[in-house]
Image 1 (tube, chains in turn purple, cyan):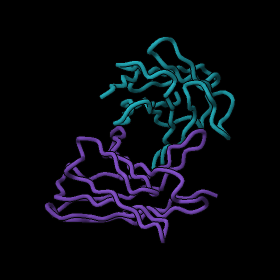
Image 2: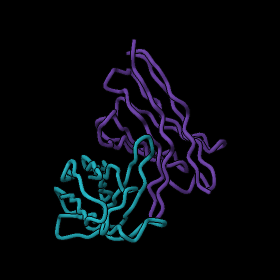
Image 3: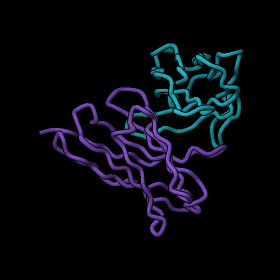
Image 4: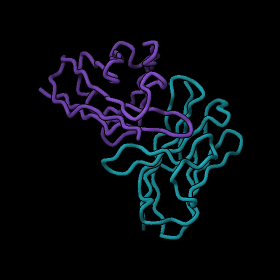
Length: 116
Length: 107
């Protein structure tokens, strides 16, 4: 079955970067785009962007354009998100998701805590 | 960006009640509207797609409907397992945008 397995929680210092992963299984990785979504504590969901694993093409929310970089490694069916120049506002759970119709699949989320 | 205005932000209802949550879109989104359920510590789960289509495995007490630019998620007879936060999502245009969420509690 389709699974998106995300990397574990990260504790990072302000100003640092963090790279999180999302390993896909159960389907052909290059057939579907991968979305990334942010959920700050107790708040709603924000779409960060997507990457097309086949072409490497990306589409970012303007809000995250200078913050997030999406990449993939086709050989390992893994999508990555690099989040840079972290501040306390970036402390959140980050999800990868395949938002296809009719089936949608989400990773379990990666908790990022920014603290000195 | 398309704004999704969701209401109410929270509500409390009794078991067996009929519950309706609303999302209003700031622009025409056709039927590109999904509803997600999120329980504490869990990832979101899609309940409805295409405004009115029940996702696989979702109980039939859930339904989605539309009237103009307003979209509705209805639970016909509330059960205890329905306690969660519900979000709408428009997917007609990037950036994708979510509603602010409705926290549903059981009285």
